[in-house]
Structures are given as C-alpha cells and as structure tokens.
Length: 440
Image 1 (spheres, rainbow, N blue to C red):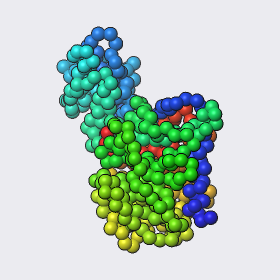
Image 2: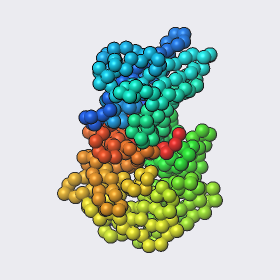
Image 3: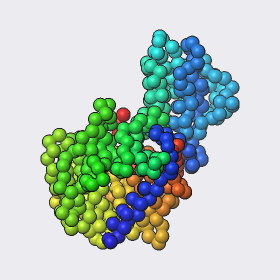
C-alpha cells in the first residue's frame, strides 16, 4: 500500500472510533485552552432590560463569550465595575480608567410589542472619551442571539480592523453507537459558538463525510452513500428547503467536494477504473470536466479565492504533497517540499496562505500547519498526532479542525498565529469533519 493510502486509512480509522450513546442531537460546548496574555481590556456592562418579566436573552453574556473566545480581548469582571451605565450619557469615563478598561460596551434591550424587541449598543473609547460606534437592531426573541453575534462582529472590527466571524455557521458530523449497536451519523449545522444546533441528515451505518458550504451559505455539499452496496457519491443539501439530491451519477465513486468561489462549480475527486483524479462539475449543467490525469492519487481539491486555480493532494512523487493546477487544467506545480507528508490544503480569504495537515516525520504524527506559497515556509500550529480537516474562518483569523482527546473525537480551533486555542466538544459521541461557512 502506498504511503498516501496508508495515511488516509489511518485518518479514516481514527474517524470511526465511537462512544456509545442513545441521544439523538449532539450540541457543542467550547473550552478555551490557550489565549493571548495581553488581550485588549474591555468592560461589557449587562444590557439594561426595559420590559416585562425577564429578558429573553443575556446579550452581555453572549457578546462577552464571543470576544473572550477570540483570544484578543481581556473581559473585565462585572464585580469590579464602579457603575453600570446603559448609554453614553450615563458614562463616567474615570470609573473605567480606574479599572484599566480601554473600551466599554453599553446597551439596552427594549420590549416594543409581543415578541418584538429593540436592541441598542455603543462601543466607547475610554481614554479618548468618545463613541467608536453605536447601532440599533430590531428582532424577535429567536433572533436575539444572532443580534448579539452581530454586535460582537462590529466590536471585533472596530477594535482590530478585521471583519468578525461570530455571526457565521459551522457544519460538522457526529458519530455514535445506538443501543442496537448501529453506527449513527448526523450531519449538523450550528452557530459558530456551537449553539442552535440543527440536524440536517441522519443515517444508520452509512458514513457522512466532507461537508462543504456553498459561498452563499444556503447549501451543503457532502459525501454519503445510498446503501451499503453502492459507492460514495456527492450530494447537495438545500438548508432551508430540507431537500437533497446527488450532484451526478458517476462510473465509480465521488468524494471531497469543494465549491468554486462563484458557486457555479464543484471540484471533486472521482475514482473510476482504478484511477483517482480531480474533476470539475457544473452544479446546474451537470457537465463534468477532468482536471488532472495521472496514475497517482489526486484528491482533496480546493479553489483559490479568485477561482483561477486549485490546489490538491497527490502522491505522484511517492508521498502526499500539495500541488497547484489552473482551473483550465494543464501541468500541475508542486508547492510543498518540507516535511514528510502534506495533505488537505485550503486557502485563506486572501489567497496568500494555505492551511494543511502536515507530518514533519520522526514520529511527529499529523498536525495543522499554515503554508506560505511565496516563501515555501510552513508554520506548525498544533501538537496533536491525528489532527485533520482544517478550515479557515471566513475572516482568516482562526482555523477549525478535527482532533482527538483521549478516545473522544472533538473539534478544535487555533488562531492563525497559533497563540489562541479552544476545544469544541460534543455532548454525545464523536464529532468530526468541520466546515466553516463564508456567510450566513
């Protein structure tokens, strides 16, 4: 067996270790395992509630959790606050300088009618004593968590100059053993913080792999099986309609779908007649075009942000490495040369970096790295032995990937500079195959 096939077999074997559970829906919980020591000190005052009964959501808690898990902010404890304003006219800036806050978040939730609320917030510069930004939103109770994420996104942008990615969604696959001993797979979507999880697909003894979001966030492509006898195929799922269809019928099996930036094409791997190559499929036309033609294994395609070329994994030089080819085909260029093996690459939003799975040799195992095509440098960001399936956040600031903690399959996230880490654990079963949507 070739080295690349061995590596794939090892990763797949790791993906099918299960925890016995009878639960149907698995939620995610986030644990910060490493953060920056010198984050920006921010005070977020509890939003003032103006309505009957209790507020439907604790917006301050959601915003504070978002900013904290980004690793870029030091959220000051409300126990240290000397006052609790809800708008700029009530702010005594000296109170906040005394507790060394650089920025202050204040806000209100006002009940306007049955299931109708107005949310206002202001982000204040404590030392310049001015409003950096202030906005208002209208929402029903079910939309308030999303409003909180939108507030977090705006704060993140104002404080860092980087677009926030809190109001986004992720997809992932959970794997469990039922009481009858069957393997139960669930394709799930959730908010970026793991809340509002929703089951998209549930299968028994038929694996679900490689979910990929369309650029507009309305559809998912993924790999599944019709039955135990047929080969793998790529399916399209409409999130809002709840319908799915195979993208095409293949003479063989299809896997590893990747959307083009314009959403009109899917790059995928087709294995037929003993050969595995990268193809491009018109999503609506069904036209299939072969992109690579080589006796080696060519797989795991990913588009550049401008759609002009693709990267893919190939063992054509003996071990898996990353190659680049024009979207029109032609000769492929090898990109990675350092390390024993490199696989599963995809671009950041700028097109200047690739995230990938790397094996540096000498028993290091499989870890997540960021590769810079211009210099050929790879920065290894994780220290696991079976890290896989990395994907950039829509703003390129974080990387979501799958790994193992003991016997458990979990998702983890690391900042693109390696300084911030967090773990997303499933309440039931293993969780694998993460994908981060570029838009909601």
